[in-house]
Image (cartoon, rainbow, N blue to C red; front, side, top):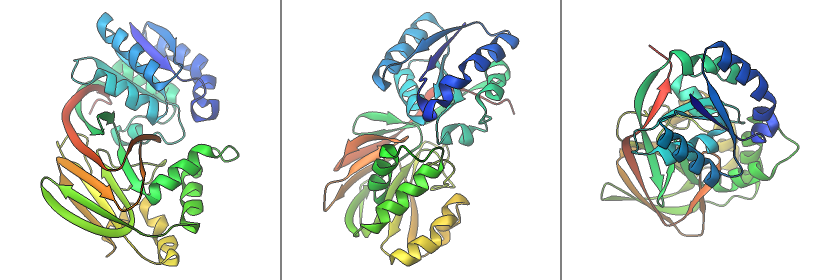
Length: 289
């Protein structure tokens, strides 16, 4: 038996529209399941804990925010996470090689294997992908407020809108006890490689290495930033002189003005904030090799 935790409004209603076909696919794979609609991320966490107590995999049908909430609730419990992508970004599924079509992804629940994956934690809250701030704070806020633009393009739209009014900030990062300063655009602390619907902000990040990739983007002209923005979709931006990638298990981050840190598409903490890697914190069904 599976517990299918679904956010019907995720991805502009994509998850809700896919639900009948997902149920049919689960039945075709011989997977018994119960449907649990969720009212909020907190409610999703409660549903995941109830599933774990019953010994059932908790399968999230929705976006990365929902998947992150379910993963966080299962943290260190031995419960099993299943992923059916139904949001706008679906970067966690991309990182695991899970099909982006939720109906096709049902096959992973039937034939996949269980792997232990790392989580990140920022301000005491778990995340699955990338926690970032700076220009990303404004871009995420704008993307979340946008209604007319659908799909992953909303994140690029948010970045362009945020850039128009952006002024560089001064950040202080302490990585495993070593302090660095940056005058720049963005600080991204990555458990996984991507965010924003296919942007490979941290192309070398692994969900199983016990470390976080810390990607910083120093100040540059807005024209240069715009010219280089497409490179993030291939991960080649890390070759630019203004970009640095470091690795750490623990990160302390502060800035010279207030910023909200976002992770998995949702606000997760206010700066200053402490971030750490939680190695092998959650067990998840992934495609069989």
